[in-house]
Image 1: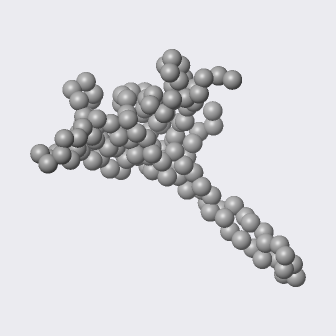
Image 2: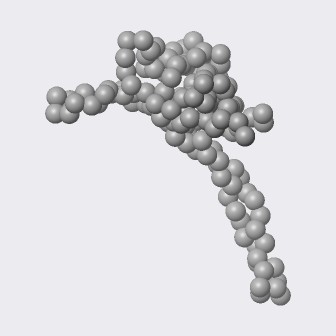
Amino acid sequence: MSEPANSLRFDVVIDAVNLGAFTAIEGLEASYEVKTYDEGGENGFQHQLLGRVHYQNLKLTRPVDGSTKGLSGWFSSFRREGSGRPAVATIVAFNDNREPVAEWTMMGVCPVRYSGPHLSTDQAKVATETLELAHQGFLAQ
């Protein structure tokens, strides 16, 4: 058995642009609508048919520091420089030896929300920024 992926080690690349390391990724999810169909005369059985597939938005979070490119700039330039065309994004998970273990590639990726850090003198927390991405599904590996 190979070494498992470590949930602390992963990278995000969108259209060959490495956006750097993140501390959290949420939303690697897909689900089908299930439609039920009752067949006449058969009271003990119900057909379950797959409907549309729904892909959850990805939420990428990381601390704000001087070594990372600002996500706010990338978010703003996406429409301007990329002509707003959907992109391809890849998330790679690594093991403790920084060897790739798993990879998820999404097509039709578009940024939908950027959240900057919440700054306050009341709390001594690490400032983080969040990028939310919509996508049209996973590509087969």
